[in-house]
Length: 303
Image (cartoon, one colour):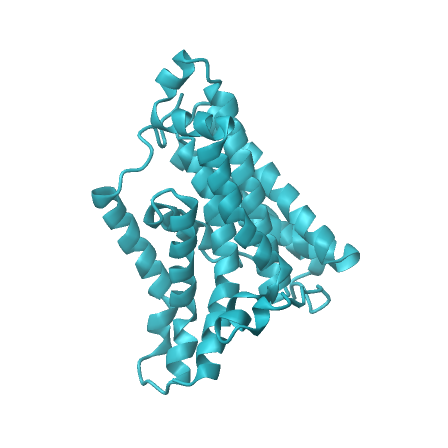
């Protein structure tokens, strides 16, 4: 394997990892508060659609902001149903995702017609970090990426600081581990859970925006293709810790890009096997996570 092939594979893997990392960081914060948000897939889809529409007229920065706002709206809808309404979180999350899928598909047809979004959507340019980008192999892989990838990098220490170094983070973890005990100690569990879910929604919206503006450059119905559900598996593999989540997201990103690596290497293995690899990994992680890793004790419990 040549150095240029390694760099190309690594660069593509980091680019593919970006939306997974953003979504998983947000989902990790929500799950730490005791809420599993399956509506994250819908939040990513809404963020992608809003980013595509707004970026077409106002540029990529406005597109990212619109994606974040759309993600917040979807998360708030989920929180209202699941937390304030005290309904089953799994069913509520799936309902929100299905609603977002249908709504974005309908709106996309109204905006772009049956042909879908064209190539008029602007995309983010590479923003090399001076000095770091010149490091052999690692430089172009990690430090010659679109700006939104650096935002994803920053979210890792910010989430870790929020969860483990602030009073709000302590309240989030207390709400996830023992909501009744936390409430007895004066924690406003419902408010904390809503706030955590909305933060997660912001991250999922930006993740959807990154998919459109930093990878595909177009919008199509159901374009997230289960990435939100993969993000939930990443959270379990990363043991609900932002640093572990980051490492796990990179593994899934590399698995997604492995099809191109093996094709370039001339292997005769059907590439379809590598297309399904991230989903097989997600299934395996979810199966193992229930045996080896313990999530927040109050996860998915209504309060």
